[in-house]
Length: 253
Image 1 (cartoon, rainbow, N blue to C red):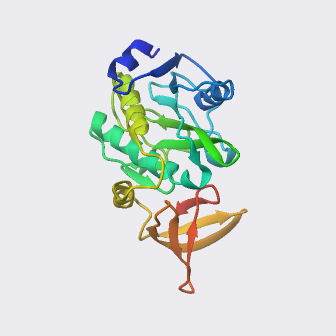
Image 2 (cartoon, rainbow, N blue to C red):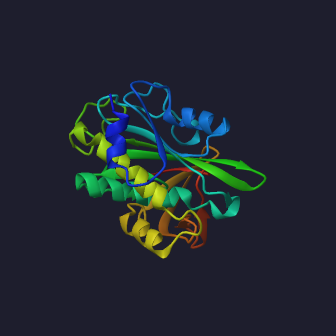
């Protein structure tokens, strides 16, 4: 089981509460319960095993339960909702930086916030806002990172991968991810974050399929706008911008 003291020994940010569990349904579910209960501190919640991890659009998140990283971080940015749209983009860059600093693995980003290594998904990120009257008081960022080598079920083995690192790096990686997230300026996306996101994108310049309300559409991904939206070019030459939460996306075959 992860040790709270070990995680704290690597944390650079001050005044952070850490919760470590051997098994939990979802670190983000607990995070929301704590926030709804009035928790105002910066939080890190980790678990060795997850039985009910959640992904985007209500999908389940497959947890390997093998020494990988399952964590949620809670921040309290107190932003107007309009200024919080870049959180997901910034979080992807932050987690990618943390992975590289601890493991040496350089990851790519598949819009919006999946991280890839050796052309397979190794990390999923889910950002959830806690808002009232147009103000985002808290943000819960759930992160799952496949760390050691492992076996996947048949339906995932051609899609999912791992960083191929020893699970002994978990505490250090959790701390690095949290510190990177805590250090972000969650307002307007900076040029530095946007430039890094664009450099690491595996989508820009590719044909994509995207789905809106179950309908499949095809376009070319041509860029990322100032708010992290995916700029696409449709077959008639017109352009549009896809926003987080509206679509699911995969590279065209």
